[in-house]
Length: 178
Image (cartoon, rainbow, N blue to C red):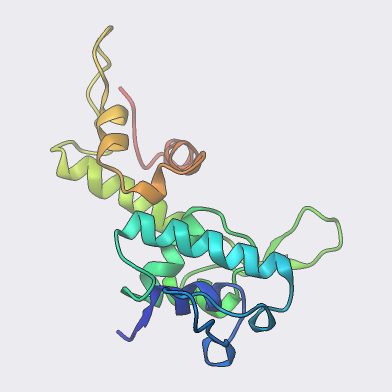
């Protein structure tokens, strides 16, 4: 699978062609001139995305990643405006027919919920539990959910990503709490 630099993945996540970006020669790191971005907001979003990704992956701006890994990370955080091609690179089964809430009937890509849910199921099994037969809760003791959250990658712990993925698994009866 082809790899890209972290800064290139962040540019692609905003629909910016990395080859068109003009580096700022005076600054160390993947810092680019203002004209590399269509707007000040996209420049700010680029910087935030790059900081988040490199901090969570413990790499620098030039660290390599696959587009699939980056897309799963970005969608897991709920980043808006991801190009459809990038979202689909993370999961070929991504649905594009979910109507948005604007009432205009436009379609938007579904975020990578399956990747989030699969990661939770994988962690449950790595802890030695069956997702369909989780142990009963013991008052005053941490339960399986706490252990899964502790082992979850950082991108799953951002905002409500983990809670929502856990709730979807319960609703779909893919995990059963005793």
